[in-house]
Image 1 (cartoon, rainbow, N blue to C red):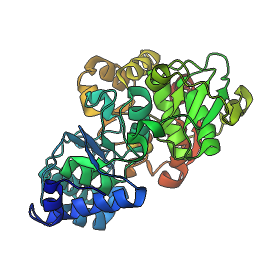
Image 2 (cartoon, rainbow, N blue to C red):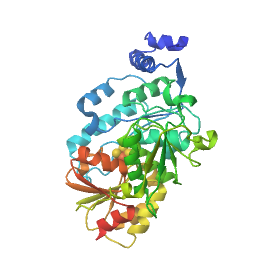
Image 3 (cartoon, rainbow, N blue to C red):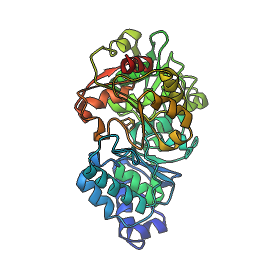
Image 4 (tube, rainbow, N blue to C red):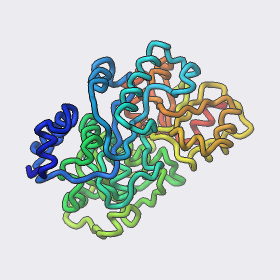
Length: 386
Ligand code: F3S
């Protein structure tokens, strides 16, 4: 792997021990994946920010780092709303440890935007090289924005953030961004975001780590978000194309000739929507867009919840959507920032949870120890208010 003189100096330890370790990590990754060199990045997003997921050893590792990030860097959701953690029934002991994790990231110069939807912060554009690690954000950045990132692990993304570069391989190279399998999809009539999550849930299992080209669907941005997040959860998808919709598919005009064709129909998708009794409802995986908050507010306007309903979004989005948040909370629902239903211990008290997300549908059973039901946004609100 070719390194420039300044990179060689960093590797030799001339710019401090932490930068040396980070460069060693990037070089090791580059060698494993056959990168010829490093490529400069414009932003980084680092997973491994909830104390629930990184624990004592992750915190100690972070606290031992002595460096500053070189590019705009944000972190994934943490284990609690930083301001309203008591309302989430988070224990003071957990809150203290979570704040230590946040302080460690802050010392590194990371922006304290704790979200899996960093693309709403406008920190990347088409064609830019970035190093993001939240799998749903990777799928969105590559597919919907047309930026270029591999599915980084948390330490790899942090190393890239500190060095300002990442190994140039995989999805950074245009030649590796071509579709590898076609998915002919048909959704039930009147498909909701949740149906796109269900489609992604199925498709991820079938395509695994290949790049799919979808035909037969016309998703908007929120639907693309749901589709990619679910595929990244059940498969290892980091990039997908939708014919005539996603930017690379319009630039390169893939026709799918010669590729395996998988068909997913409305019956397969519909059968994931099984009705089971639930004790709570959670919306916002990935974090809600302003449009989703608007829909939730519209559905909850003038109604009152009869069981806990939690909504999750980035703090910046909530700050610019004050009246929507007020409408949602007037119903008795709670809107939390910085965290989510999966990485927070706050929802672990519920034995069953209803979600409208294919990704949450995948993770809630293991991460929250709860039975999970998938429903449309309307069904979720109906369940929480009836
Ligand atoms: Fe985001 Fe948590 Fe879902 S990090 S993608 S809301 S599991």
